[in-house]
Image 1 (cartoon, rainbow, N blue to C red):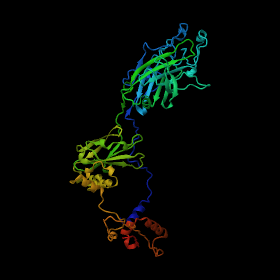
Image 2: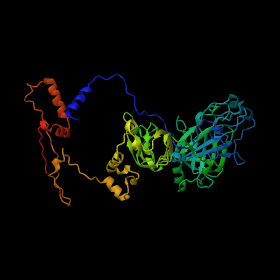
Image 3: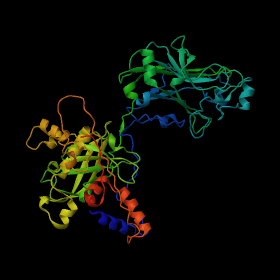
Image 4: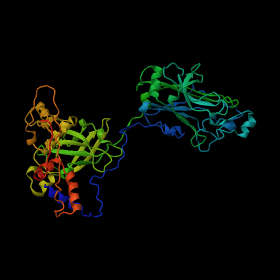
Length: 537
């Protein structure tokens, strides 16, 4: 294109454009991605039987009531008023999640409240079973002077679980509210701590707090949410710190519980002896999410036309979204109707905030019939998540002989596709997944060399004639760098006054010529420009 043709094109581009807003050619579908293997974790609501369903097996281990459990003893004079103590324990339910360092979930079951018309369990910590864990029924105070029911496990009230990792029958770890009375007006807090247990049927005490393993605890003064539920985080590290070994699916942990108060008058304390919990039985089966289906474009530069009768290259663009990063796709798992990718690289669509990943396939490897076809792209991410997505193409056999509009739409020209792939191999060898794509009757080694080794050297000169005096010495020796050619473009302004151009247009032309590339100036305007070159030859 000559200089004046470029000027004409520039002037035409100054025309006022219409006010229409162009639509984005490649709209991005916003799609959130779920983890492909999500462990079922326990959502605490204070309803132990619901939060830890016995029907979930594996996933929940139920430790039932038995003859060895010590239930609080209530004097006959108080039984009509209390019925059941809020420190009673009728069972334990245990679940374990290996995710995020491991978490052990435990729910403390309590007996049904005989005074509750709805048949709900007694509120954890409600010593006198009056429906409020922070107050005392006046009738109970009359029958048993000094009876106290402090809120939030205050005073000497305690409740928790203990763990035996070593199978000794005694606890190494406790979790819950301790027997110790806080100093001053401080509230009692949930703790995970080392344990001191005098015997197998004695409630352990809290020794050294271990806050790094402290998870969540749920306890409400609400008859609709009466149970106590708690969790111990970083459980895998805790297990190893006690046993010296990594936790396994065959590992067994003894789990027991205890509760009571020294301020609830003549009512005795509860103790639930430990029972074994097999880790595999407490671990829920991972829930596999359905494969994700990111949007893809197949040969968009050729209007979705392919020809699997020849070794043409087909490009598939896997678009990124707000919840999916295509760079996490494992190229070794990619498949397009039986074809494996020969190259891949990151691609950025204009106006899209999310990067895409393009995969290149050899068309002859794609299994598809002629005509309008739906191609299926399947893959997995590096962490094993499945990807299945589809799009339609038109498969035209022997499309190389196409003419007219069809040839224009296909935008093909000889070996330009392979030449582009070779340039990619030189600039980014890691993008090539199958080097045999360059092997047309030669060995793979030769193909690699031809793809990665340039056959010419760019000296940065305007024309080949300028580089003729350059001498090349292939022997190993110190080299002198060649200075880049410098070209000066000058517009002769000596006859500006006699020119038919106005001063403003003349200045505009000068400014435009200043921006013309050196190559264009040298080749298109050599007759009217002064060129000064300097450099070492």
